[in-house]
Image (tube, rainbow, N blue to C red):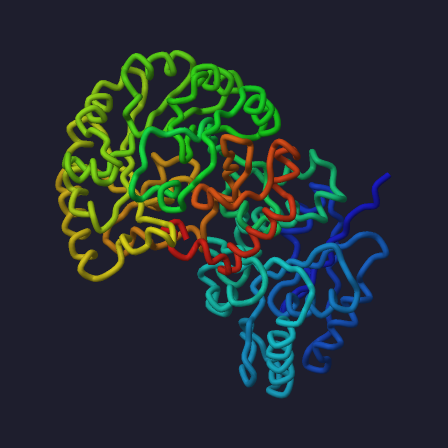
Length: 529
């Protein structure tokens, strides 16, 4: 029989064990025992006395520490003295030397006690840099006492709870989110029953905010698959990573058995997009791939350059389960389109786009750059003419094409003018964050580009890109990459390992750690960042 995991709950200054009441029942429901010791009165005791009291509360069985405010800083010190299986910091103050701690309402502590606590917090902040303790920091984005931007400078992944203040025990949604973060940690994976973990609502498809913070480096099963079934393409587009990085790999088609094994291993996914550096319609068995994915109940979308997307081909894919096709159209000017798309004929692409068969949803995606930013208004008009409520756009996102990216006040003025044309046409312009939300139809507001600055700004829901926590990106040869923006940075291969082994393997965990800590250099130019 597995030993039971225990959560030791450390309250903050001015609070008591009763502060944890909303958490205790939720933890117990998923199989985690909870104990909340009363920590000594700071009027006569010191934070060191709190550390000793917390050490005394640790069980002999596997344990995690969850601390709130001052209790969070205490938890870090406890974990340095006695290893535990996880540390979760709730709204830990990040003080500088000389700062007084954030005072709870009604606090009557003497000044000497406040100074002791302030010094303790500043000491903790200094020692964190040399600490080997792994922790997750959970902070409300409306916390008046703990600056979330300051928290992100600490060497811990940060979970930002939308709309939450300092007291994280007052809203059921915050309590559930915190419990879900705990339940998704490596400790919970080791010590909890799988059914209990599922009951904590860890599904990233329902709560992407929790997915990001799910232990920082470990993620729930991917909610979406982005699969390149072939690396072959008819074009060499000016802004494509294949062109820019001089990809010299031999073109390859994914074997159907590899694809079917991927589907078996990704049983929790509910969406699959046929996308990549190759043109999916060039795979000779594309119809069989669509049918295999549809048989698993997945929502299916395909991204195409449009040259091979004739109505007959798309109708056959629709009949086998395809539901949406996205055309990459960066300009409606023939010459500019040909320059961007390696000589591709715009007329053929537009003809196929307009003739998309009934029963198949169509959409437009445009990669905007210095070359074609003035085409946005015309692209919105194309969308309106074809009954589309929105178009999706992105800035360029590789170091190699950053010279053509939308940077500079002169381009901001042009983009704002083009956005005004789109609004006048009644067409929404959506930024590159739709992959982060469950229901784009209801969450447009998180992705709307209202001004030039919005194109590369993070939506209000998230601090950084969620792709490495939500989307499994699979190349034609079975290679897994951390996201679509890193096509030549594999973290594993289906030829050697299962999807699960790669998804929460060491290489992917390290990538998530760098993304969560704003340390991944490849992400600096990405508009998803």
